[in-house]
Length: 383
Ligand code: KIV
Ligand code: ZN
Picture 1: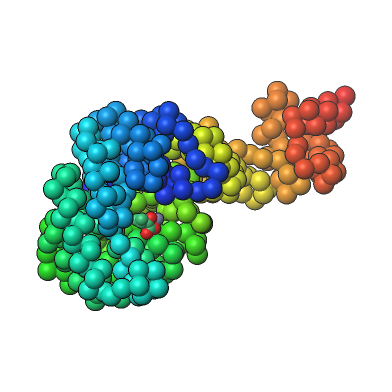
Picture 2: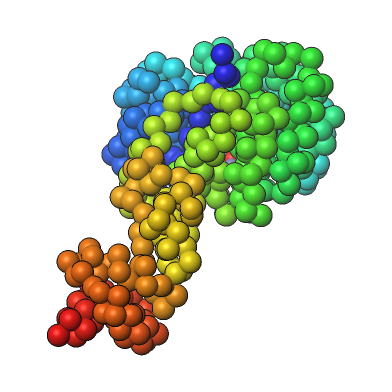
């Protein structure tokens, strides 16, 4: 049987950290319920010690969600862990996500300590958390820039302490896909107790590589992917959930099962866009408004003959309305005729040619061609 890939959604934690994206408690609960319906396996609901509001949100989500694990973030600090465990006390499946920086930059410049001390603090935190909740995930912050040999020692120690999920974040979005894959592969091959845990990807998008790195990590053996709706998150954002889900659908050679209902991706994206007041760029993969819009004549001609000439995803698979044939000055006769038919005009070849000449004049001047422009044009040639 194919392995399962666990989807860990951190829209409500890494995503909600984004300036201007703050949510109130009812909004967080609504989003958590939609994520549960979407089929997410783990919902990172917040960072309970960070504010009373976040504590209450995690507590309420933990009480309400039955079909996904609810996770709370902590630093490797006892008070953070105690508070997170309190917030998660009513969860059917509760998880604490604790961790500490492991790169030299974090160890020396941020924590001003030693590698050994970092391992000690991590182990203490994992053991402490493991006594309070059934499941502990450990994050090695800035693992992307952490030397692999040391990262393997950290991983082994945290698994021995009781962590069953080890998160390997590319916190600064630094790695190239082959480097991130090599890191996961190194851990899979060099951590003696790796069979007692799963590795998780958590990739940031500073170089636009978050999704590519996550997929590279999954191919190399990671079995949990941390992501957000629309790829929102700290700075340039996180891996976007919708991209990973559709990559798995398109590339069956990555033979992993999962529970995501891809038909909900468009509505989920719109919900996050609206509630978090964070517009999705039109050319965003999968959920951008232009993701299924065709505007050049060559492409339109192909799509009108067979959608698959220029579309690898069926819009219906992501719950989108359908392919769009957008009229611009780069469009061709096939697209104009398509719109004419939609508006009820059956143009002869001569009428189409004449309309097309007039259309180009209008399209060179007007950015958005509306139905009203077309009707005026078709009426003139039919007169
Ligand atoms: O990017 C990161 O390293 C994180 C951790 C807190 C998991 O968000
Ligand atoms: Zn992050």
